[in-house]
Image 1 (tube, rainbow, N blue to C red):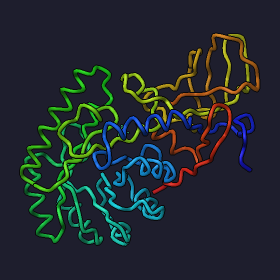
Image 2 (image 1 turned 90 degrees about the vertical axis):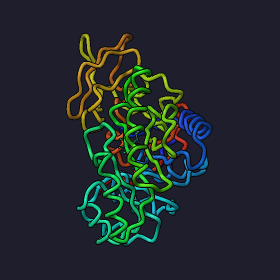
Image 3 (image 1 turned 180 degrees about the horizontal axis):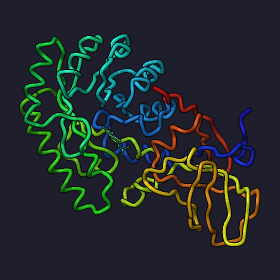
Image 4 (image 1 turned 60 degrees about the horizontal axis):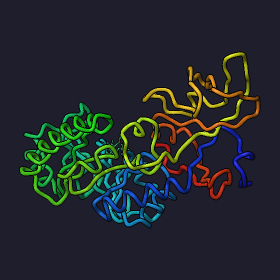
Length: 330
Ligand SMILES: Cc1ncc(COP(=O)(O)O)c(C=O)c1O
């Protein structure tokens, strides 16, 4: 049964503020229209939300997992999907009736793409984040290898993930530019139309990428809220106060409902002490009663969403829609 008010929801429950989400989608579509944005679905894992992004003009998407690619194809959002990640078994990708491009950074991942039946790749370049990606000077060699293997090389990608969350704007811009110089050097060796990079934190200062892979902008979190970006917090976790003691209160929303890698979540007009598996302990400025509903603002949206089966779209206290988080799993 669909709840008509948040009062009727079982907690913890993901809430998406409809007006804030729409504001964020409109703001990004104005700054990065159409194919200048390749929205990353890892942040929301929800094809209904991806369809809203398509309605705002973005028809190319970024994915982080094979499951996300499959789910986007099943939802009919399959014009041009980029798996911005390395895989060593690409058979599920090759079986899809859709345009699927995969990131490669080694002879192993090139061989896996070809063996799995994937036809198009981008060369993933390490631009400063110690994660996947080849050295810029290896990109040309890998592109030649990929082409010799029968793959079409669409260009390069390079995620400046070490820069995107820095709250000092000057440092963020400087690291972004240094990263993109590395990516452009690689692109000069690789060729192709795509220079794919960027995220919510660099959506406006990354002037070198042909497309920006931002994901968090749609729903936002408290880590990104510190950056003074023009996006609003749209995602919270509704919780119920289950115990009150002198000096602190406890609500039913803990580590298993919140991504905590960016630190504690926040609660308006309260100090969060700590989270445990099923509990959040906090001290509120005003009196709190057992049964009160509170909104918990997550520090990191991606892992938070991945803990939940559905999002409740709300306008004020009214639940206007329920969207499945249907891209979870592997
Ligand atoms: C490869 C890649 N591109 C883009 C992003 C998007 O970042 P954000 O959600 O910060 O916009 C991520 C996020 O982790 C990523 O891993």
